[in-house]
Length: 92
Image 1: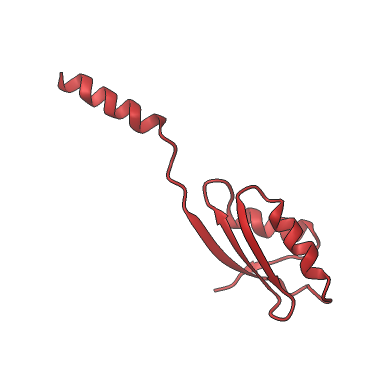
Image 2: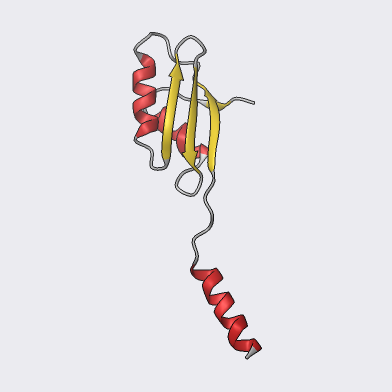
């Protein structure tokens, strides 16, 4: 009986998806040189799977991105901005 319960628990644990966490990261985007640049950066981030919200500031030259860490990574976010022509790095 103990083996059956252990097997059921193990099977259940292996079939459950990992718990995703919502994370927020601030990216430095120094290459934005005009007030329309944030539109391109925001669009690139928004098209990245898992991004829930992206707020881009021309004045601060940064993007604050909220995302599901089970669907995307910080590396994917910086890659998206780079591919749009605006390389970014994580702000400390």
